[in-house]
View 1 (cartoon, rainbow, N blue to C red):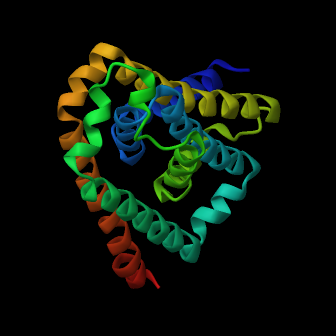
View 2: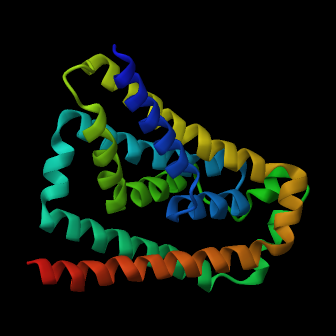
View 3: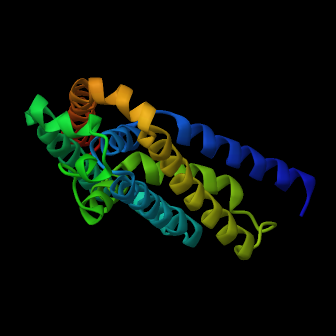
Length: 222
């Protein structure tokens, strides 16, 4: 493999990591889950997000990603579904009461998980967040349009896809691990109610923006 190809791949890897650490809807869901659930439950969100990213990554490798991204109907549907999903998450965050967060500062794991959700529900929440975000398919399509050349074999492309998917999971799991530490969680416990409300508000605004974009901007293109 030539040095130019290695340079391109290195650029793609760095770009992926920088995008990964940039706060967005997935990051807010990770913080919400880590604050409100036990670590074993919150990891479900991280795995769900990684699974959704993995699907888009391998669709791009197979060449299906470009077809999906070029479909105005599909991209509009993703925007609407993603927007409605984020609005649903925001609704549940904003309707919760301050008493619902009392368990966060409890000393026992059992109490910490008392008001939490199951691992499966957290996985579904993370997966729906990742799969309904149209920016994910566009981002990975732009990255792999650089990597998908004749000089880069299919095996290496698959290995890169597995690495990128794994990185998404381990980065999100790392955030959960940090926020689940007793001292960190004790600090967050004092402001968990307000964090959840702030995260819910931002997610709701993002959801409204997605729906607005799908209805008005995409209509102009049709």
